[in-house]
Image (cartoon, rainbow over all chains, first blue to last red; front, top):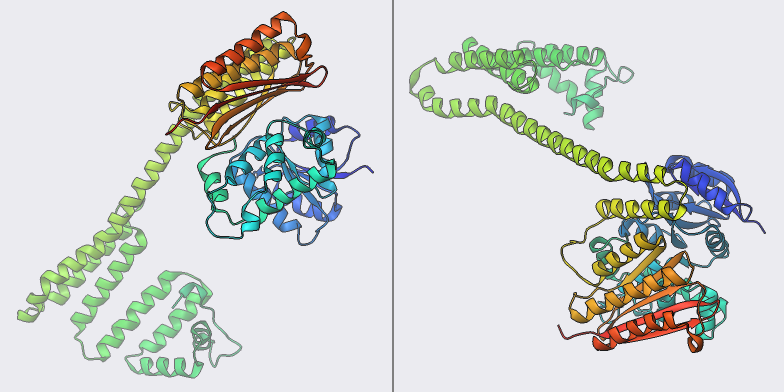
Length: 211
Length: 357
């Protein structure tokens, strides 16, 4: 099934570039260049996936998610960014985006990421995986929910391989798991990233930048 | 009373709805307001004047009308309380003058006429009140003068401070703009020119674009002190060099950072060699590099998705490079593992134990 996608980015040139890269892999049903344009458009079109720039002229991506998600719970968001500050990326993920990829991603990889997000799985770039590993480092936990504030050894392994540039299929091969299991590990990590109150998440984001 | 919120309420009113409007604005019983106005009307007609003032204000929302009529109304009240005409006129002049100064924004305002006029009024009023003579007034004089000075000078000083802030902000903004222009000119425009010159060489143009991107990014988002060397900064530098020299993309991810001691420097040099190797021989357009600093060790993974090779049948040339990486790591007290399959790409894992802090 061809996924219906809405592109939100304030650079027209970039949107047409992404459109061309994606080709027939997905059906780009709409484009918007600002929060103001995007919110009614997404509500009207009700697409499978919204490709979302984290920084827009009139706000950040999480503003769109917050405005759309209650009315259109089926719409999934994938942050597509040219390395912005970490607090923005983490903000958009904690607002509910199902992943984050950098704008230099190839068309094929982007199409695969859109498919994955449309199915409810999570997509991490190597850089984001590195960040999550850093933020969830063991032994620095203070209070909170242990289940949400710690990564399991397996999740850690999966994230390490993502950071090293491995694809899900390759990770599954290396760890003798099915691709589905790898996907569910990543989805679990996403859930922890969204729900954890771990203070490293905010502290790290302000100290470092995901440049 | 918040004057800007006041509206007459003609429907609920007896006359023009002024009292009803005040009652609604303040949330009190209109009868109470009417009673006060009636009492004030007995005080030399002040209530009537005040009523007219508020009515006029509602028709033409000018604070001057209500101010002027208000001053007259207060004067009438004071008169009816037994103050002499002289004192009443003096107080009216002081109050009116101060209102003029405050509204005018002080002497630094673009049009200081109002302030000068107001100060003159206030001074005249003060003289009128105080020159009544007697010990009583003389005792009051220093305090009155100090108070007047503060009231008159206050808005002026405040305005002065505000203007200075505005000027400072403007200056900072101008400097920032100049800095931005210089950077855009020095680097971005130059790069665009280079790209146009080498439009027929995709590798070169990609490398130029990539270098520019990195520069701009470190300027926009960079918060690391580049003078302070660490695993992350050294590795970023090495990745940048390899990208520029060989026209490949290096995707750098990291978790944790480590101080740039000798083993870490050796690690970065070995990683650089591994990246160069991948760029030159694998044919892959992108190299993934992941650096990880844990309590036990510092590790760097260099991975490409290129041609790969059979470790058992390595061409002499590649063996040489691999061996030099391995030897370098051994000398630094660490280790290197090269994993490769033909067609499946290559990954070099480099690590050194974390030295005691």
